[in-house]
Length: 119
Image 1 (tube, rainbow, N blue to C red):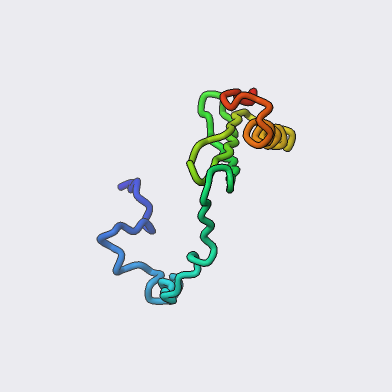
Image 2: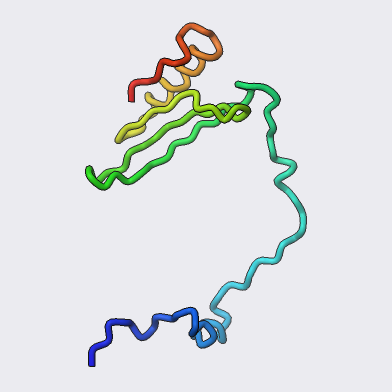
């Protein structure tokens, strides 16, 4: 008789018979120290355009079988996306152009705010 399920597969009902439990091969759960370190690192903006965040994400595009990159620059106070760029590559020149666009649009007032970078 041929079995399609490997012998080493463990199901939730078989967790108690795991070969790793009796030999201390599994890591034990980390204990909480009860201290809150994040409260000292949290930065809270008090007005728009005080703190900006930049993020680069990549997404697998199935049709073209490649990754596409999305660059976003967000105002942390309003959570408004100030600039974004999408492409199959993300180069330093694109990041530099995005920051120059932000500076020119929101800090020098030379461009219209609704103009987007070419992606």
